[in-house]
Image (spheres, rainbow, N blue to C red):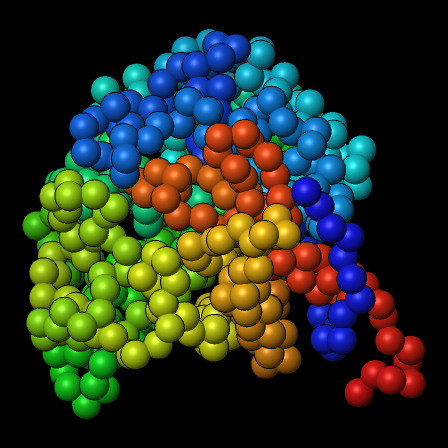
Length: 482
């Protein structure tokens, strides 16, 4: 069920060539988990672990994007999207990291062609967490050799798609695929080992740098990485314990990922915090030079920011890092067991994340101020999960999600007015989908998916997003400009 966008009365402050898009990830939407040559990723294997995924859900069908691509692109066109941010599956293109699978590459080639035919820019991410299970059985991201295997995968993907895809993102949210997967254990591969998580961080950094250099040699036009970043705010800025806890969260969530890429060095204070976990043995001569290969854009994923304390406080949540099941979880805050996240009394999403739109403005402005050599920024994920209800008229009046998206776009506008070089916004997500350890319990989509029938329905938030996009394309007359 679809509805044409209606006129909007909101002012259009973001003007062309600002890029409007939406995003998905292969493992979350494609399904066809073992069709046309695809074999297990670590998420396929993790889903078979008892208690790992809510309700015992798996990725076999997901939302069947693999077979429903044409219809989903028609929805993108109806929404007026400029770009579609998607990921390719390493486990589909190189099953078990063996030979290239032509059927897997053919799927992505068709997807790219259909996007271009619809006038939609393909924005490709190479790694959105679906490592071939065979590589995990050889150590996964704790094994330095996996970085070299990633370059082979990037080369194979570029060989088929590089003539049509301009924007190449190496990694999506390495915080999650390293720390939640190897330290917390609530994401695949489900390990709880702080030293392994630190090794995963460094080897993913290395893979990013090696692939960036190789893609540049092959002729890629735009290369970047997407990081999920936060504002770590001390609960009491006069309390040294709270200030230090906020510094540690900022170090592990933000700076350990940003600074090797932007500055060519790990933050000294973070390295000191992590003494004994083996960082000094991981970094070899030339690694940091490789990791800091120039990038053309930085993707910023942001859902919430964090009030942080160095004292016990169970009034808030843990940022969603404890998982969706009764599975025992570790902590992503390496060598920092004393960190807590007090509540600010703000509204919360279905993920139990606080809603604080102004935090996005603060983050975007901070990035440009503290890292003046950063390339242009794109908000590559921003959105919210809520418990949707289908009304009697068949529509989804998701007022909270609509407000979340519109309020955050307002903050992007304010950040741009403050001097942040933000070139685009991608709402997460296009479709309801497999939400990792939460299975199909959490809905982020601006398009509802009925998981029994796979019917798609644009939610009110999606219709409002379409109106916002349409309004941004109405350029005011020169006399109306400030």
